[in-house]
Length: 158
Image (cartoon, rainbow, N blue to C red; front, side):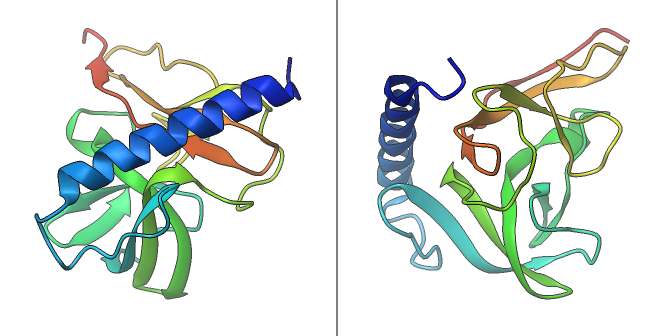
């Protein structure tokens, strides 16, 4: 099933639909949000902490992006993924769509969750520790590309 073209096309259609829906929700809210083609929604040239790296799941606090982590509800508020950096403190953040080939070695067709131990990190295992947050981030369509589909978060009992 890993390389099933029908499954890949289904995820692409789902991604396109989610992004169009999100774009409609954002329409008229802010002219500051430059929207990419219909298959992606991207925030360009955001302020980011120097620790943010390409491929990191990021959260926003004020007007600055930081690496997200599934160790608490506050740290797990993922808004998207850093897909490029123009300087140490500027990045483009993908809110919805495909990340492009920014990763290597992802498990094809696996679900990915926010890591409770690595800031900005992804993992295929659902976090199980007390107080960890289960934050679904998306599914891969290749070893290098994730379809972003950030879902509701659930915190495990302390």
